[in-house]
Every structure is written in structure tokens, then in C-alpha cells.
Length: 222
Image 1 (cartoon, rainbow, N blue to C red):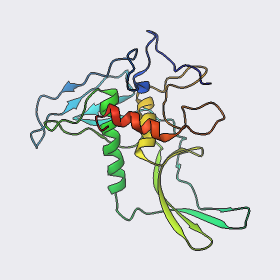
Image 2 (cartoon, rainbow, N blue to C red):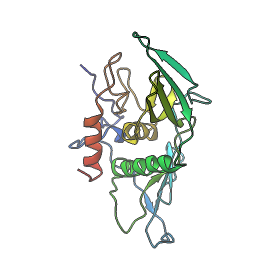
Image 3 (cartoon, rainbow, N blue to C red):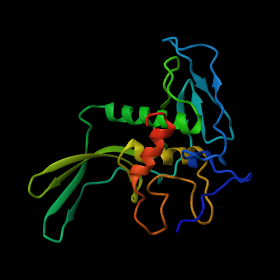
Image 4 (cartoon, helix red, strand yellow):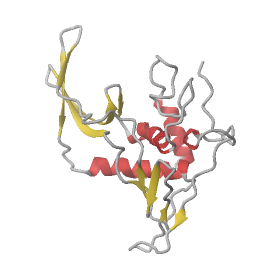
């Protein structure tokens, strides 16, 4: 059985832990509307506070905290041999579509972060929120896996260290919010609700579907 989620000094859940139906949770971060609209006539928002672990510039979110190992976290080529002798060779290859996958992730993350952390849903009169980039030292890459029978497949990952690689923006969304809150944790567990952090120590990762469902509800997509 899991320990209770950590709470702040006021006894409230951290904003990154907010799930549908929660009431005893820290209020959303308050953004300031920028004095001028953007080139498309859309309103934008900003937030600069030296005590926070993120900042917002004209609806572009910058995460200033990272739990990634220092240096290059892109995995090197490697081959796994199965019990039946079949091999799977993995190596990083260039994205055939350039920056499109990265941009899609950053847009999805911006929408989730805005909904959960700022309490702001998409509005046609406002510029959509977007994440500027991934946290420092996190590697975003395309991995090609080739089996000994010639079959191939590719998978996108965002990797912070050997045991933590997110396969979708939905998987990373909750972790990004935890970083923004300053990585709060107690002796028993962290306040992060991502599939890799929110599970019993030593157990398998938590299922992703309930996590994604909560994100869709909070962002008005469900």
C-alpha cells in the first residue's frame, strides 16, 4: 500500500499532484496578462519569480529544474540476446521529420501544464501555451530496434538517466509538473504522479491509462 502524497507546510497537496476532484490542493500559479497582444492579436501571459523553478514568457513555459544525470543521456548502440538466441539491436537514428516530433511533444506538454499548474484551458482569444524546451540534460531521440529476423521498429524517447525514459508526452507530463514545483517529496514518496515515480518502491511502473485520463479531464479534453 502506498504512503500518502506529500503535502506542503499548510497541509495542502502540491499543485503537481492535483487530480480531478481534489479540493485540498495548492491553488494554480497566477500568471500576468501581457500588456500587448501578439502578432496575431492573441493574448499572452507571463510569470517571473526568482523563487520558482520555472518561468513563463508570453505563454512560453521554461522549466528551470531537472533531475537528469549531467551530460549526454543519449544511449549508445547495444544488442540484447534473448533466451531463444534471437537478438534485438538498438541504436539512435535521425528523425526523418526533423523537429516535428519535438514540436508536437512541446505543444502537448504546454497544454497539460497550463491546465493543471495554471488552471488555464485553451481559449481561441489566447496564444496556446507551449513548453520552450525539455529540461537540461534530458535527451530526446528516435531509437531504431532491429530484430535478427530483419523486422524493424522505431520508438521516440525522452531520457533523463538509464532507468527513466519517457515514451510519450503523456508519460512525461506529470513529471514535468513535479519539476516545476521544485521536486517536492517526503521520506516515503515524491509528489510526482508520473508512472515511474508514483508506484510502490521496487514495484513495476504504474499504468499510464489512468494518468492520461486525468490529464485529459483536467485539460477539458474528456
